[in-house]
Image (cartoon, rainbow, N blue to C red; front, side, top):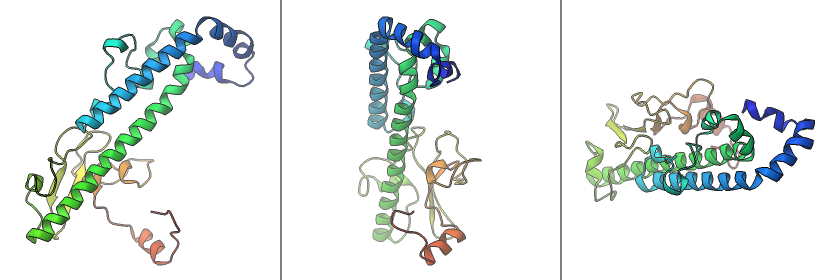
Length: 223
């Protein structure tokens, strides 16, 4: 964050000799309390997201005991703090963003796992019935106890049977926009399934990936 720059510069005399001592004496306990409450808000939001199988439940809006915390789970919310609170809570500002990103990544993996579980249920349905189901509701309850859910928007996962005899299963992805099963990554992103416009299962390997696999260039731990 730009306003933290002068405090994080290794050679900043102000940070070392003035601000650090002032913060330690006047605000360190307030900052620690603020950080702890904000982390609790993040944890509660992540727990709600997993319970409801919906990433939009994270981060939860603070309430009750957390009423004094603005929507801090979103780092940009720090920009709305006044100058005094930015000084008081500089430690929280520096440390909360990595914690939020870690929780968001964990929730994205849970959303991906929902796709994998649904794909397995689809395969089991086809082994029993000889064809793909017309819709995902047909999987319940024999192959999955609850309707497959798109964690990113709380709606059912998108599914269709394809003319080539396969199927397309996808989540609308991190941006929450349905691109019709477009697995292409956003500009500047890698090729991970979680970086696509939609999170699509299955995804065919590219010709380059097939050649790499056939030539043995993928070592242990490679995709």
